[in-house]
Length: 254
Image (cartoon, rainbow, N blue to C red; front, side, top):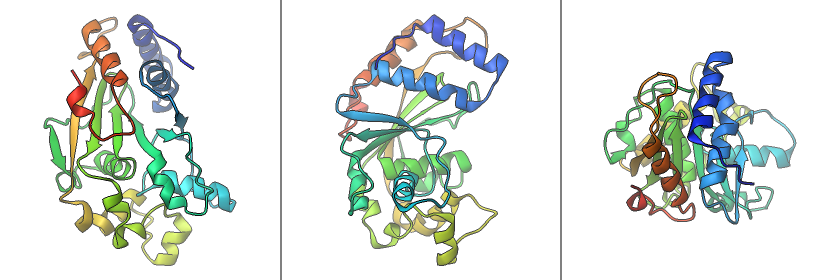
């Protein structure tokens, strides 16, 4: 389903969110709408997964949740192949059907400033929980859009994501629930799961690299009704050229 929205209406919605409620989750359906209107999602499934909790539940549901959890961080939106089915016997193989994700931050909240075209994961490990969350999601999904509704980044791995999740060390830390971490003796109630997992797989990922590109910056100041139509059109174009089934999108962006 595609629902077009003008820049004026988009900014109006963002401003009303900020003034009347001001919570991050209000952005999820709006970003979802922007992606559906502009991304090529033929044969793909865009799912809002932000409200998944790491609760023990029936086996099939737990498989679905643990796979989306990946290396220790739930994303907000997931782009999946329509063939994604984590209840299959070889559920880890389903990672090939997990094509990308979207991490959304609160409107006007300052985001990490990606000021280079390429990073290795070791550079970001100690940059705070936000960066660790992005690392975990990018390692697992291979491609990530990172946005607060105004500033938009696209990140993609420089290598095949299977190089990580198929390694003997990393494989044991995929989709861990709290109970499983307690069983393994690695649970720490004072640390977020993603931080614990990254500590365990740090040597495997620290030298791996990823590319990043700012694909849109709609507004630069917190002033009502001040927006940039050129950047809006640039964002829409850049979203439209993303091929979620390949790892070669950076060169297509304007």
